[in-house]
Every structure is written in C-alpha cells, then in structure tokens.
Image (cartoon, rainbow, N blue to C red; front, side, top):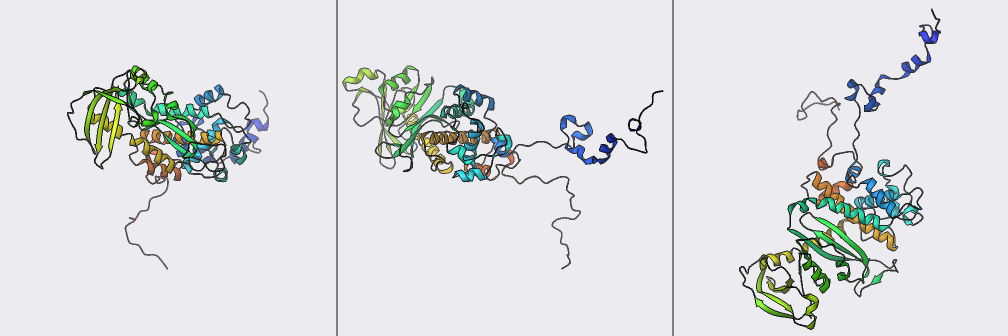
Length: 430
C-alpha cells in the first residue's frame, strides 16, 4: 500500500494548506459568487446587476454600429485614450445633467460601464488636446435614433406629415469666426419634424447666412408625404421635384409672386379652428417663369379670428380647404420643439468655441432629446416630458427602473418589519 504524506491524508494533528484556506474563508462569501458558478440554492441569494438610469437611457445607441460609423470616417485615427464613444457619452451626459462648464463635467465623472475605460475625463480632452470625433458620426447616430422613433408612423401608411423649419443659434463675441445674416451672428439648425411620432431629424447645421431653400433641396422626398414649410423655402425646382415624387407641399407664397386665377373652387366648409376660409382657387404663375413651375397649384386665402389674412399655396387638389389650412396651422408644433430644446437642453452656453465643438454639442442635444423620447415611449411614461427630464437629471446614477422613476424606491425585504402598527401610539423614556 502506497504511503501518503500527512498533508495529503489530512492528518488531524496538522491541517493542510488547502484546509487552512477553507477554514479561513467565511461562509457568507458564497453569496458574492457569480451566478454562473453558484449552486441552485445559491442562485436565489446571488446579487443581480441593475443598470443606472443613465446607462439604461443610452442603450438604444448601438455601440458596435456607432464604432462602424466612426471607423468609416477615421474618427479614432489619432485618439489614444479618449475615444469617440467617450466623447459622445460625455456630451450626452452634459445635456442630461445640465452641466454648464468643463469643470462641472470633470467633477461629475461618468461611471466606468458607460466609458471605454477607467481613466477619468480630463478637461483638456474636451478643450482640444484630443481631436474630437467627426460631426458626421454624431449626425448619423442622430438619424439612426430618429429612425427608431418613426417606425410606428411608417407602418401606418400614407398619411405622413413633415414640418420643415430652421432656428438660429446666436453665438457670442468669443466666436469671431461666426457669420452674420443681417439679424443674428451665429449658426442655423435645419430640422425636419414628424409631429405624429414627435421625431425630429436634423438636416444640417450651417452658418447663419445660408439660405433655407438650399438645405431644403437635400431632403429625401417620401411618396405620399405632405411637407409644410414657410416662405423661406421658395424654390420652383424643389417644388416640382416634390410634385413629381407624388408628394404634397403647403407653404406661403412670397409677396412678389404673381399668380393668375384659372378657376374658382367651391368651398364646402368655411369655418375652421380659429380661422375662416375666404377664397379657394386653382392658380398658375402669371409671369414668364411659368415653365419653371409647370404643376397645378391651388391658392387659399383665409382670415384668422384676430384679424390677420394669410395666403397659402399648395399642390394638393383633393383635400378640403379647411384641412389644408389646419395642416399649416400645425406648423407651430416645430416652433414649440425649438423652444423646448433651447430652454431645457444646453445649446445656449457651449463647452467649446470653435466650429466643430458647437456642431457636436448641437447634434448631442438632438441625440439626448431622441433618447428621452425613446425611453418615455418604451416604458409608457405618461408624465410630461419636462417632468421626466427633470427626474432623469436627479436620478441619473441611481440603479432603478425607468418605468418607476417617479415612485419611491422599494423597501428592502430583508429588514425586519415592526410588530406594532406605525399608527399606534407608543411611550418613550425622556
């Protein structure tokens, strides 16, 4: 019979090193083992990972897809430690937290799961020591998030409404490179907005002196959609392209546009919501430039209840006059969108002063808006978006469910419940 050593036999006189380790290990450490290595009795006691509010909010951004977009533009070609994903997370965090300076961003560090490493964010990385990601990476990310918002609208069919407008972004004296259009000095953000799905799509961010019609011609026209815009988007070639694609437009003609009445149309309903239809007629251009706009046109003249008279021009010959006037009245929703973004997101005070830094922050603001809308729709949150944004700002690092963000945290079930009723009167010693 082979002889074994005392350490192998487990002699009671002298414990082996293996049994010493087991004796020193407390029994309660089994609770902290990974669930994959736990027994069936220990799986119930294992700790589950719950992402924070901020981590759950940025889940719609596909990290692999974002990295593919960055690689296509060589965004991380010269970055060694502060990658494009870190830059995006910091900019989104600045929008959701209301950080107004670089020092506040450096003080409130992002948790490690949201960044690509454990290195803290330095102020110099955002100022310019690290090359920023190309703005097209954030522009394509904003478009992908907007596509997640309007999927339901695309399934509904042909009744699609698109509101087109631009808003000025005034810049201070620190941005000496900014151009002026005679009224403001700064930049301009062009947006296509879907009011049914509350989905904004950023067309482009340009200088303030760029004409709106020049950017409007870059829109991908959808068949059956109705585009509503103001008189700043006056371009006969673009209007013809919309009609050729079997789409419709509703706009206001310029004061110097000569129109010739060809036939008066019968008005079935004159009263609308806050306006009255005065005239409905088929028209055409009265000047020699009629060949540039060889499409059937329709002119509506309506009067508001406050006394103002408005003239509308469209290529839709089937809708009722009241319905067309109501579509143009709904254009005010995109103005409300611009007002909400300017009041509740950080696009008035910027973290940088160069052209690329401002464009990145504007795209990050639209990405933050889309993330809030996606989370509110996925969790079926019925509270106003302003209240939801405020709660996200306050609870961004708490590990809770977004659907219960407006409710108090649950009570720990391991704590002993008192035997007496909390409403019962009790005596205490002074």
